[in-house]
Length: 180
Image 1 (tube, rainbow, N blue to C red):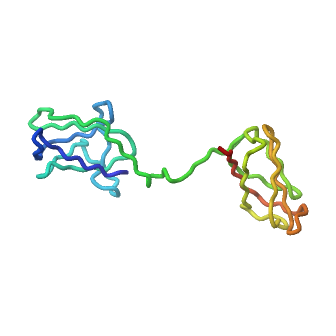
Image 2: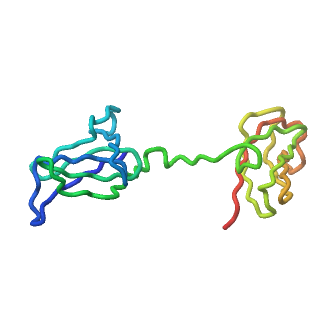
Image 3: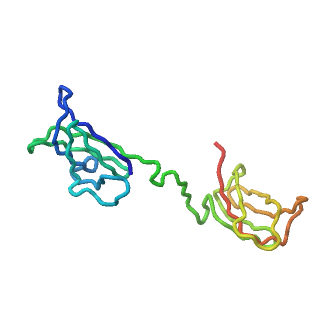
């Protein structure tokens, strides 16, 4: 969640004290779920705040777009449109990539030191990164990748001299990128 502070002023720049500020979902009159702090997990009932002596109020809200309807004595004084909340600590910093058929990441288990992974998203210039996830058999010193564009790629275990390591039965994670 991101903290937003609003300062409500009149046309002369004076603070408007004790104004009600109702936070709604952008473009609607539907009350937004807002909080008074980042950790309590308790929503502010009615999504309405009151400005202090400096004309300020603050709230915490999930990533999204909001509007603020400012009233005092029942009269609408102002509407602040398109307040954007974006907190990069709210899981946006975690890269999530789909797995499954023809996906850009996954796992494969070596049989006799090699595995061919069918994947039509692979191109002749795909960059395929691999990392051993679960050791199996006699683990290899390194792994080589052979690509067949539009069809598949093969992961082959190699010993320290570069020869095939046929006794490696490890589970290998892969991640596929394309150059720009």
